[in-house]
Length: 608
Image (cartoon, rainbow, N blue to C red):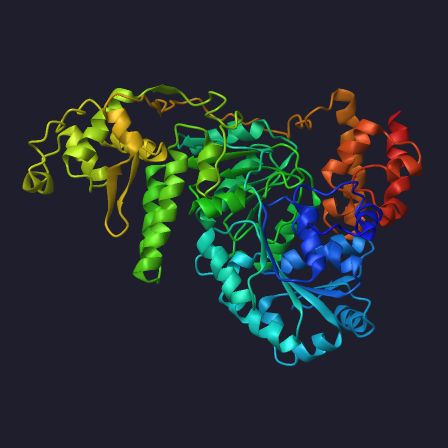
């Protein structure tokens, strides 16, 4: 690997306030500075933006950043300007004064990072002006949007390569958090003129706790979960616009500061709700998936899916909005049969070709497998991205929060049904065979005569469907046909059927009865303390947060633009008393030390 110049390390500390790079950043930055095409697949929270921001400062050239949302551009520009970096954007929300300032900086070549949407980049006349400004490289954020194989396909991203060619011979670098092999191949073909140097980092986010539960009084389940996270910011994803508003109102009634967010809201209200979530420390947003890609808030402490996500890729992207600062974060995903039916219906109703529909159904099947898993969630999740791992010891299953039983006998019944019916039928048909349903199809196929017909009549069809899905998750069953679906035995399934291997299955809990609300009305309740802070530390941490909020409101920026929670926690633990002490705090660069150092020192000194 090419060594990074000392200037890169010096700028990392003086501008960003960091002593070290995060895992994987240095090698990507070195490749970017080498000048060739680069594609980096890095998990959310791993510091992708540093991989194009720092090179722009090291070589003092202009980097164009193609970004999908105005909110994301605005957020990054605010953060960079707070660090003293010359950054700007050209978008429809700019006023004339802002546009004039951006063009002046481009003309005198002091602009280091210019953020554009793919639509703006494609505009006539802009290419020549950008070429005159001396563009050194184009960084494409959320690069999976270029691919129809990706979960957030944006046709406008297909125009980026033509814009690159029109501007001239500039370096192209692309970044994404989620891209399987098909998507990576598509990105490479559509954005680069030659094969890029590709970095594929681990998809694991070890700081994020994974938890799933079948729906059983969902509001009660969400309330119980949220009570452990009072005073923290979080996102609750919902399947419909109406549900976001219902849950936000219920949260407010239950004592949580909450807002709703969806694409059908009045634009001003939607922007106001988003700004409140960004600026304040304890706001919960109930949102559709329209919310999130443009959010760079590092201290989101939890993500809840009140309804089942659309795919493993969507799920991974959405939970990745929690814990971007590397501190512990929690997730809860609720799922039910109705969710599965809705998601399948949505796929069936899409205006897409049959091959695309088959792929989307297969992707949704992987999510169902994750929900139904009886082994380590993280292991199953990473397996969906072709990454091998050991049991994590930290998810709900590894911790023992989910009841398991020796399901070998049930598994043998199900596997026998698969085998005796010809290894080509799906869960619904197999469940009918096991429970003894004499449907026309079963009678026509003669499967009422097989040995396993009716052997599982003591269980419901839903229970057998769960067993079959869990066996699929455990690699005891595989898809029988890409074209027609159904299940067939694997080597693992054959070993279980022959009694050579045992298997643990999840025991679904009985339905909860009554219980009322688990939330506390009439106030916010006690705030949750960051890990490792005692009562005295928590008082100082909250005082620092209040000062941060005061400054953020005065400056009209998000609270984390001033300082991230990780920085305030470091201040709380180390309690700096002088400006040199403050300069040593994580995330305190030269510009922020100058602007905010004295104010935060005063809070620490007053705390005693």
